[in-house]
Amino acid sequence: MPSPLLSLDFLYGTAWKEERTAALTELAVRTGFRGIDTANQRRHYFEAGVGEGLTAAYRVGVVTRAELFLQTKFTYRRGQDHRLPYDPAASLTVQVAQSLAGSLEHLDTHYVDSFVLHGPASGHEWSEADAEVWEAMRKERDAGRARLLGISNVTVQQLEQLASSGAEIPTFVQNRCFARLGWDRDVRTFCDRHKITYQGFSLLTANPEVLQHAPLMTLAAQLEATPAQVIFSFAHAVGMLPLTGTSSAEHMIADLASVRLALPQALVQAIESIAG
Ligand SMILES: NC(=O)c1ccc[n+]([C@@H]2O[C@H](COP(=O)([O-])OP(=O)(O)OC[C@H]3O[C@@H](n4cnc5c(N)ncnc54)[C@H](OP(=O)(O)O)[C@@H]3O)[C@@H](O)[C@H]2O)c1
Image 1 (cartoon, protein in one colour):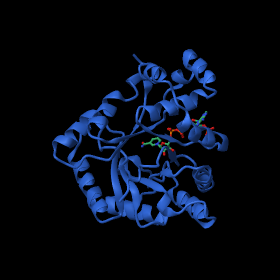
Image 2: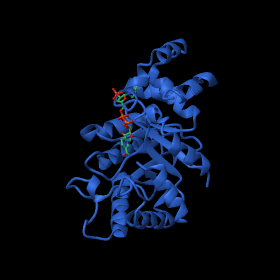
Image 3: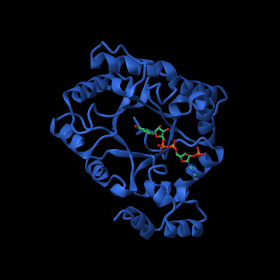
Image 4: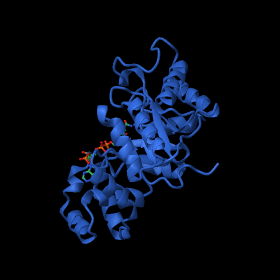
């Protein structure tokens, strides 16, 4: 099976779009996004709306299911509101299966390309609950309902604990990426070492100081690019798979165009070390 990552430059994030989810998902696909990130977490995502947008895009022949990379997530009870995608009294293993079954229904597909643990159960360790969920996710993958697995909102300590437990290493890590933490340097280093693809989110919203950094703005202007495009281009240059959740047609085009922006290596290094 060819790697679904080969032609994947960007993920379109579908959080916080509520009744605009279907139209914006369809627009993102029409604009050229081929990777879609969602979650079976009604509190922040309207996954059925993502499915509606995809169906509309399939109907007009913009894209086929096979040409897309669809990623969803399993979210623990504490990250959900009352609109749960599983029976909270069921075991975690059953909750994982019910959550993914719901996602497949929402997205009208037999498999997702990536199934992500939205975040470990606690902020500081890889717990027994996480081990159970991870094993349940692996079984879903082995049954063909997901192709690849990932973990989000994870620390390097948790990844190290997971690795030393002998459990399978994820294909993806998806984290909020703060420039002031060296763009999540510790986690990215772990990812490099284990051939994990690092997906970065909040690249713009977590880093307003970078977007207003005077030397960066000057360099962006020289490249005829916006500071946002420079950040996304930097993310690509250091091997990240970035997410954007823009609701603007203009920004969708600009964000995709950032992939073709070749930053001088010195600029990549300067941005990498912006936090010192
Ligand atoms: N795993 C997790 O826990 C988690 C958490 C948060 C997010 N996510 C995922 O990541 C996705 C992205 O979320 P995010 O936190 O990165 O924020 P976001 O929803 O992508 O917001 C980015 C902000 O940047 C602006 N923007 C985008 N492109 C721009 C451009 N070219 N020029 C200027 N402004 C631009 C957007 O405004 P406009 O709309 O006006 O363009 C928006 O205000 C989410 O939809 C979700 O799928 C995952």
